[in-house]
Length: 475
Figure 1 (cartoon, rainbow, N blue to C red):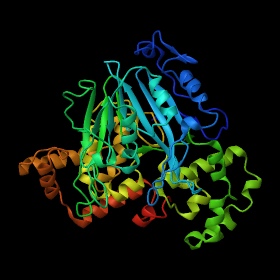
Figure 2 (figure 1 turned 180 degrees about the horizontal axis):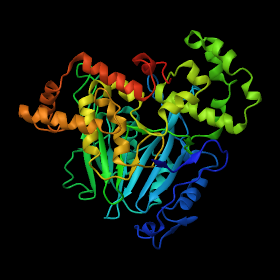
Figure 3 (figure 1 turned 120 degrees about the vertical axis):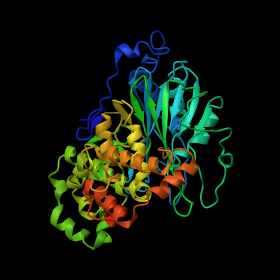
Figure 4 (figure 1 turned 45 degrees about the vertical axis):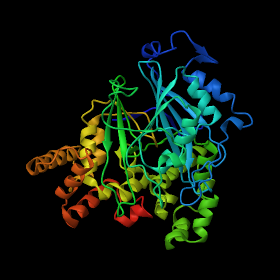
């Protein structure tokens, strides 16, 4: 099954880092003879040495980010960056990101950096460009040649303009369908100048011949006011798939960048969050469940138990925002339903994918034609050793009656392709807008089909109904 390289939250000891292919590492640009402080340039030892310089005082991690309701993206003033080497030519940079305010809604956001054959760097999904982050990036050696914004979602594009200002020579590529609400303003208004539209044709790009792109570009939602687009990137030399929000892999490994003190506090049953939920009797049954299930449990639980419970609560909050009360108090059952495999996150499903399932299924099938052996998403666990078949199972809900052991998206694509060919429509939903609109009209299947897809998705995550996912789910 999929393998994730991080550390288990059950242990308070230092988290292990992914093992790097030493043979491959010795061939990277600068890797054979350049040494940074504390180790080879680009190595995890060098990253730890650089980060140690920012541990005191915190000035190098300062980043003011007060976006307010409805998107309060914590941390608000300080963001630590952790850099890990994935292979000889690939690194991930991770920062904590969540709602904050003591609500337990936190996870990470992940940027991936790829060294191109030119020696330059491709930056996928830029994060907050703190002094620490920039120092860790410059420590790799080579120029930043390209910045890629692979999504329209706010929590990623908020960092593009400040990152581009730190690397003004880099070419900027953004997926189509960028928008703002309530007034749809151009990217230049937000400080992004000279950006190019990311397409599936890599001709003339810094990554031509090295990285392939496939776009998920469904029709606009909410009367055209909401637009969604995500790019999947395939790094051919590493056989690695880069995604953003389309799917996540949840497991018991907590990322290093999330403070262990926060995980432990979230796992306690006498913390501010649990106390508040008891005071308001969340869901009308919280106090009764607390008395029945967990009263005085902290007197007997080990620190390892508290850490495990804290991380599982954090995962459920990040997935659902408002999990069911029982899932908050005793998260093991709900966590078991969503961990150890790829899945579409409940929020992404409820806001976007449930409304455009045929497009999602077709895109997933095209992505799974790549022979990737590793996937790096922007959130939760990563990198994850996996196969296209394992990844495809996350999208089986796109065929009513799934999940079906990974066959769903392939059957959906075959069926849809046949329909479109008979109608004389291009068999490529992410193609030109006119073709996509025609495809949408061709695949309208009515409320019964939509309900079947919803039921398939909910069954795959162990939820009973849509309301349980939208606010109060998690088992």
